[in-house]
Image 1 (tube, rainbow, N blue to C red):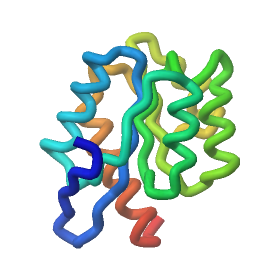
Image 2: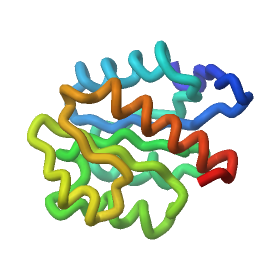
Image 3: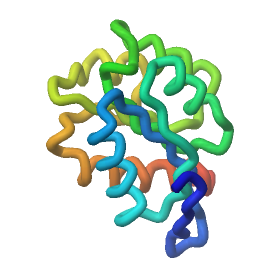
Image 4: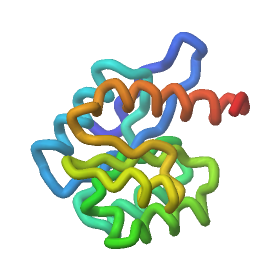
Length: 134
């Protein structure tokens, strides 16, 4: 389903990448984003190196990244923030290190149980960045 696109009310489509080492959760985030947000799904990743490559893709405005793929000290987040200062990075986990993720450059860090609410906020932030509002 890569390349599926929904446009927001303002005509902007946000490119999204999803990275999780759990195939079940990867599919859950993917389907939720497609169903409830105006996005273009660019790709999926299941390893840290795939996640970094996906985030480096200029079509990706928002990367949803499982903490287990972010690196022990959030190296993937730091590397992406260096090469893509405009990308919105969301780090999620069942046991989130919010302070570490935000210090590394993530825009959001949250427990997976809070996923839908925070992902909606992240899509909104990505939309504003694409439009040059934020």
